[in-house]
Amino acid sequence: MQLPLGTYLGDSMQPFQRTLRAPIGCTGVGLHSGRKVCLTLRPAAEHVGIVFRRIDLPDRPLIAARWDHVIDTRRNTTLGLPDRPEASVGTVEHLLAALAGSGVDNAIIDLDGPEVPIMDGSAAPFVFLIDCAGLVTQGAVRQVLEIVRPVQVEDETGSVTLLPDQSGAPVYEMDIEFPSSAIRRQHRLVRLAPGSFKRDLARARTFGFVEELDALRGAGLARGGSLDNAVVLRGATVLNAGGLRYTDEFVRHKLLDLVGDLALAGAPLRGRVVARRTGHRLNNLALRALFADPSAYRFTPAVSASATRDGMPAPLAAAAAAPV
Image (cartoon, rainbow, N blue to C red; front, side, top):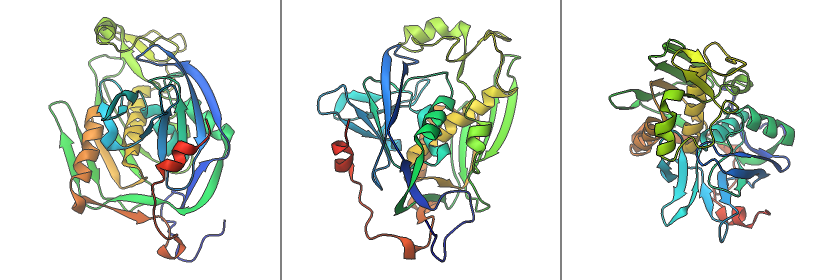
């Protein structure tokens, strides 16, 4: 597609929306539910966004991947519908990070269970699926969420700050600190330029401690966790036979989670995110604080207005009619 005059190319983001070229799927186990689940990624029309569809439930309810649909942030991000408590989707963050890092704007995600499969605990299997399916550039202009003025949320453990930044691709910065000598304090900054998510973050796995396992399972969590889908530590010892994929895999995974959680904004960010010892709860609170202050953000086209089409519908009806 030839870009019109006035196209904004100051950052790495594609100016036009993209979707998958073909459907593609996988089967795996839910990290927290322990249930086997089948997932299919499907192409979607312009402006649909990322929408989950629970094909195992009556009427196949649709759950848009939006910050205001987050209903649980205990060790994962869970989306749900307020009027249908059974219509929820857990552990969405790794898949959403893969879609955002690969530049996918529109997709229908069919699931026959309550949780996205954990796969190997990273986003790499989902990036592989997206690469295999291929991408198609659509005619509609992509909207960018531009941070206009700083927004910060914090609690007794950490903070997330959203800052204006016009220097190029969005910047994500993370500090973490754990008492285990296998982690201690780690810091990393990544600019989401083309290829950087796949190279720098996608393979970083979720992690946990053996000492926490009984409490987590007692709370209904981590029932599907194993050495095959998480980095597991006992004190300072990494129990996985292959060790770590990166020397700082822990902070990289926290960055991966941050990218996925902030993808619930519904548009690529233009700005800088500085996170200190954050988790899914604070990540979501950052978006809630941002959207509570209309003076702190604006949606702008990633290409000149002369290239836009009339109207910006939200055709969830088209999503509902998409084939299973």
